[in-house]
Amino acid sequence: MRIGSGILIIWLLIGVLAAGQRGYFKSADNSSCSRLANTAITIVAGPLNYVGVDPNVGCKVPQPS
Image 1 (cartoon, one colour):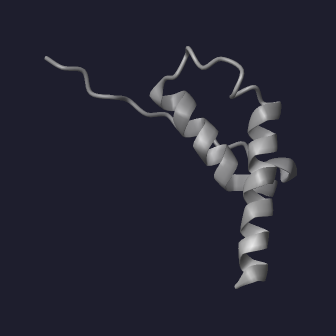
Image 2: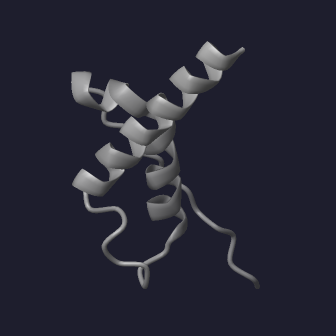
């Protein structure tokens, strides 16, 4: 259990590093649905970011009528 938790923490830290290198944390003012989703999926992808995976999510928030 400890080894799995350690691997998960390292995995997510590598994902945070990749998101930081892509500039997702620079501007908090521009917090659109797509930007937040891209940041989250980049963190979850972890080390896969460094082997060519470039996760992008497009989302639309419904507008009130």
